[in-house]
Image (cartoon, rainbow, N blue to C red; front, side, top):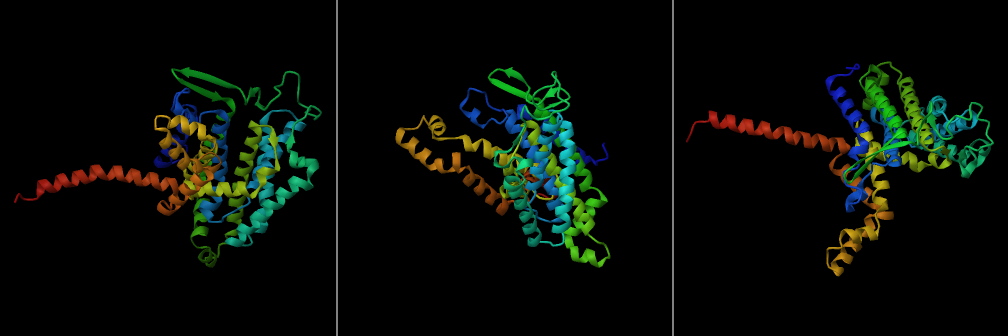
Amino acid sequence: MLGLNRKDFLLFLVVTFLALFAPILLNPFPVGSAMAQFNAGYPDLMQRFVIFGIFAIGFNILFGLTGYLSFGHAAFLGVGSYSVVWMYKLLDYNILPGLFLAIVVSAVFALLIGFISLRRSGIYFSILTLAFAQMSFSLAYSVLTPITNGETGLQVYTSDPQILMSGFSPSSPHLFGLVMNDSSYLKFGGWEFTFNNGYYLCAVVLMVAFYLSIRIFRSPFGLMLRAVKSNQTRLNYTGLNPRPYTLAAFVISGMYAGLAGGLMAAMDPLAGAERMQWTASGEVVLMTILGGAGTLIGPILGAGFIKYFENIFSKINDSILHSWFAFLPDGLEDAVVFIIHPFIGKGWHLTLGILFVLVVVFLPGGLVEGGQRIARLFRRKPADKTDNDTSAKTDPAE
């Protein structure tokens, strides 16, 4: 189906199911319950899950297949955002021209940076990409202010041309009249589910992006990228020049990042230089490694994991903890809250850091390896039981 083998097609179906039913799956607790704090089925967060999943999928094509670690992919994220907002300012709020421009501009930008950076490998390549990203941040923040509006950020004003804007056009991002901010609601008992137009647009883009990444992974081009990662020196001895392949992977990865940045501006018509900072580049590295670099679904899991902690655990405060442990005696309640306090709220980075260390130490393959170990554990039990039953029947009784 769709040119995929059975295993890849099933994986694609899993991603499709998770993307389409996320508004329901991410709201496991009733709205009024104490555990509703852990619900993540609201549009802003779900959009971030999907957008950063696309960002991580693209980064994984470069890092997971070729082994080239880039610390500058946030530059393409920012370029994509600026491109979409400029289309809002010049044409109208239709997101389609902006997304197209974001992909094209980020591809050209990635081609220029990759052409220079890929002359080096290893840590030198990483430092070069980081330098380019920081230069891009400085240009957007303080030099190219007529284009980027500096530290204030680029946004749409009523004085902008918007030559395609009419009195009947929506005054917020839309896709041929389908407004991204609009949502439908479904109430079922104590649950309330939100189905947002913008989220489902991002979900469809995620499915397409994931499908293309599968085709890249399974193609001869992907096999060549794996050869680069395995032993580039030996590949050179065969007479093949790996640079065109690595440059193509870098450009494709940059296009994914530009698309993700464009979707961020498509959901919220604002672009700022902070999206180009090195911290954003480091974040996508953590997402890919945490989920499982070189795997297909790993970057999506890593993106969801980190964004969940960032948005859910950071909102837990002492008042919420006291409400959870109110059944304990006062002294014990205060002691429990005192112990947990450093790991929630502003200390969510500490919890995430501990989990990241545990994953790297005990699951070098990331969350995907953890899932594979659990799956093998369940597969072994029936087999072991069958083997024991067979041996019991064949062995002579003593």
